[in-house]
Image (cartoon, rainbow, N blue to C red):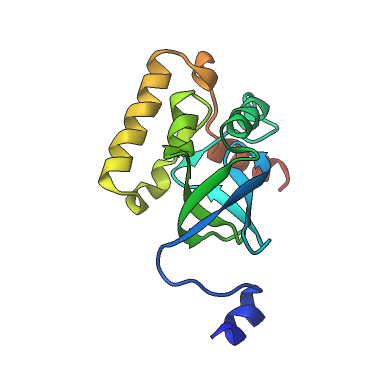
Length: 163
């Protein structure tokens, strides 16, 4: 089974949702971490359902710090639904039963990534929308600024600058 998948993608193909358990050994930004599993394999994980500011954006470094406070050097359970185009596993990340993505939204350190909302359960869609709205209403984190630019718009503007 791995012959074709390993030649194409360099990793074993995984069918349907799968779970990873391990320790977070790296936090790249406000929505991407590295998990080290029991077999000492590293997994680059994109936190599902959120989009945090890029490091070059306002609140980008603060979002990375907040995610680090939540998960760095901690054991987590990652329930993964797919692999994205950057070969990151897209996962619900939980530490001690707490949803790291939800906490990032609660603290105003990420946007609810509605573009991929259909991939989330109805409960998570409702919860994430509520958490983002509460952070916005109370001006927490990036919502303290009146003109916060969502990361997907910021990335698009950077692409335009390079054309």
